[in-house]
Length: 116
Length: 112
Image (cartoon, rainbow over all chains, first blue to last red):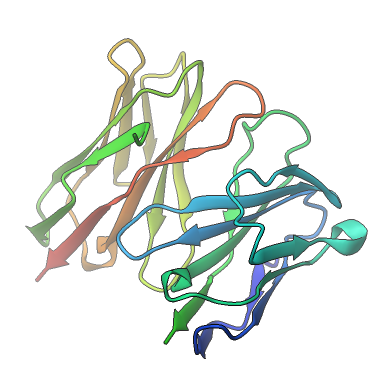
């Protein structure tokens, strides 16, 4: 089966610019996650969708980050405006999870963002 | 405070040797613990998953152990290969809808 797709793979922008990332989960997976992974650290959950509804966005900096999952399939994550500390890898993951959190998450290759 | 602590932060081993990575957690109530392997420039890939009642799980040359009483887990790599060079991340989840708690990872470098 095809894995989680993300684009672009790399992005370099200047601070205060805007950027958007795209994710297409594994077909049929109801749950989609966006993580931020700073170099040398484990991933940090930004937002979790169940179909097209938000389950958890408690760690999403809502003053500058936004995400949507229209039609419950692919998703976009936007940063507007970007700051230097947003430099990180942004990982998208999906699972067939329908309740609780026992199912395995499958991760995409990530988008490496560099903010100058 | 991070609820999942991993050690060591990094290690270098010779090809063919064994190594053990440690994970201590405080997540409660415990549901399951996973070990992920993350190659450079790639997303994490699940190696093993253990629930409360399981104390060991193997996946090829990778063997994970779990002591739910002391809240400790280890990942043992046997006869390491160059392709084992990666970051190994311990991930713990609580019962219900609680978010996964990720450790910072152990960076393993296998040298010829």
